[in-house]
Image 1 (cartoon, helix red, strand yellow):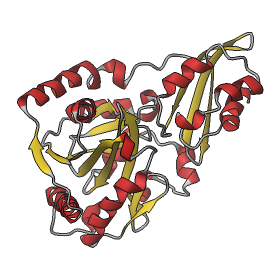
Image 2 (cartoon, helix red, strand yellow; image 1 turned 120 degrees about the vertical axis):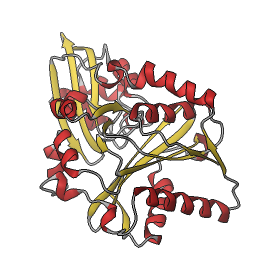
Image 3 (spheres, rainbow, N blue to C red; image 1 turned 45 degrees about the vertical axis):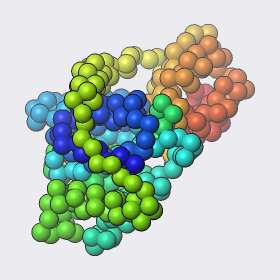
Image 4 (cartoon, rainbow, N blue to C red; image 1 turned 180 degrees about the vertical axis):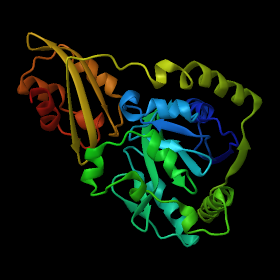
Length: 328
């Protein structure tokens, strides 16, 4: 296992660093990091629908898209992020508990009543303190999550366009009432103290397992590669805002596995363009599914045939429920 020490607070650089490690590292990786103020979008989300762009521009809040699915989150220096990267052969399916349980144990050792909640959250006292996401990429599984320590809740509420159906499904009236800061449970410490405590807990667990851990900083060569990926991809308008053209029909529905927004064009009953968006997770990129559905006739039989393995693209979905979105 390699523990990377990353002191950058540039959100574009830090998201690029995750992909760089996915592209280049053969060993398992753990990394703790923080971002300046930013909205971090899920891979499949529509930035125009999720972000209050005027608020973001006025308050200097960056917008950056990540590789994993799930929903949009707000980062600032009062938020601590953690990343695990492991070879896929050791984690063949999406497996949130494998990575969230060590974090829960670390928080409980500090006196925080942390627990796993729902598909990808950690809570304390009934309020969300951590959101988590995963993806399969380049033969590896990446899991990353947030830990709200002293985040600016007013900025969080101002910059995110909240899905009211999602809030309704959770029985919650507002973002502010749903989320909480760990600083309430850890008086006398700060976010850097939490970072050190999480790192110490991780190292202690690895030692107990007899696993050696190598502490590293990015070499000049690695840093140059990350900066290149930052400029070419993660800081680009195309990656963060583009790729969401106009479609003739759009339908949205919230399922237990997440929200799905389906947009499509059809001519004479045949699909000519398809686009999926939402805060769902998946092992395979939905672009592959969109290509497969192009040219499909709008019949339940043909749709369900092409959607037979839709659960690999939209985790938890089945062919019948997604076909129903096309057919109304």
